[in-house]
Length: 326
Image (cartoon, rainbow, N blue to C red; front, top):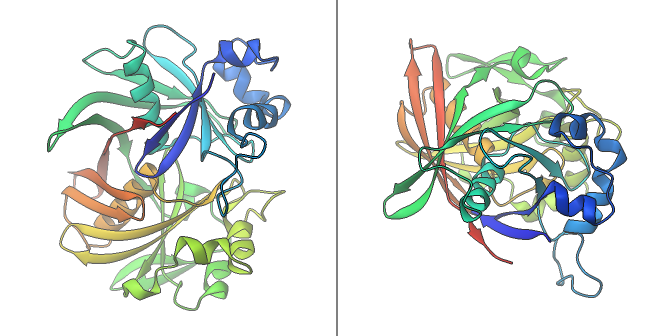
């Protein structure tokens, strides 16, 4: 019923609305109705599709067999509606790796036109977020370009409260007190919105990057959860709706190393929208120029295309590839 795909170490299950209904989950007919009623069905869908089968959970593995669940399509022709369900039952506004996986699933089902299609992610935090996707080949690798639109910057873009403006190499960024309390080196952060909210913390030394293992351990895990997750799981501080956290170091020209702690998931091997947020923050702060940027994460390297607009804004495209794993 559920098929699992891997995109740079990010694993999502893909399941159709009809299959969930046949399994006894009371899913409304339309994606928008599903989003508004997600509290009534999302936990059951995650349990059914993403929990490890009895006795099959590998030692030291995550509590779920995937990083989330993609429900869709709700149509047989574009535009295609989809729901991105985090393993805590919340809905994401956008996931670069998730939409790459969904595009691969649509392609395998014979539904994705060669010219591409519009994907609409429905969630319970506002209007659906649209992303155009087009099949492509980059350096011999088949995948998809996702047009994520323009990045917005600053506390207002992500609904952040109680943050202080500070200087970072002559540019204004934010000091997020809960982050700085966890590590004094985490004092310079750039907020970015690319469909969903991100907080990119800027570091000068690769040794200062937190590892995924460190982020899974106490007390750091609890502290990051309080910052990243909305209430009641977290504190929703500084962003009441929660925020995805990234840490970034400039490795060389057009190349950034990053780590990710996702709202609703925790530490993850890679994230397409997080990579896009990191590249956008790096552009705004003068670390990279417009053009192709490589963002290196534990799960792999994400190619990002930045298109500068009027010297003040940037349009973001993400290349992704995915493979069926079971």
